[in-house]
Length: 338
Image (cartoon, rainbow, N blue to C red):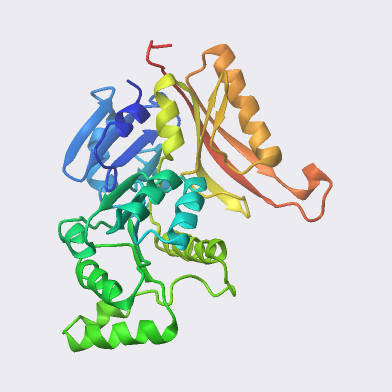
């Protein structure tokens, strides 16, 4: 099992760290760990083991030098989850749009007819029960994004009462300014924590003049993406990449960048003989990385660390992005070991 398939098998990935040696005679040595616990190390006697105290203290993904060796450390995030309270028109639009972002959606709805509509729209999970009951034991997490979209303010308040004490990355509530203010006043009068309540995004979504359910859904997802990116300190593996990795291929990861390169450190793309999963920025830069990956597929080369530049001089375009990325390419074994 290659290491990405091993990560895919973990029940959750937040807080998991991986480190890989980028060059030298130990190139490709990798360790998977949490502070205080080694989950995997290849080879078993890798010099990375002696660097665990230092690697455990670094807060975010980066390339660094340890003992004369270059190391790429990744601090992983778990797959984010969108939780919708209510299954009206805006929720249905959110379910469909979230699919484009590979954002799994859980819907809580107390009416079976509406719950069925959420299932048909593509929700990953639908819980049909009274809102208070459904939320009572529903777990929060640093990767959970709650949006309250119920049909009246009494249900809004019931959901807010249950969600507010939980752990979450984002909490939004749809409604007019008057309806939102009414719920806020009622919550404060009932003893809600004013600091927690101040974190509520309400009315929900970025201000783009949205009117239709689809436009409102777009504004909500835009605000969620904004919140997620502003607070992001780690890297992740998309669901598509985790599903494709067991078959093997060449995985390309951006480990360093300069200038205005389009994608950030930790961005990944998997190349297989049948195609690719993910993107590291498109254009000439991605074409160069794909070319290097195909060479590795053909030759059996295990690892390659290379720099790729995208500058106006290359494209003959004065408006082209300037910058460079350093990419680590590694061959992942498939299920059959190939």
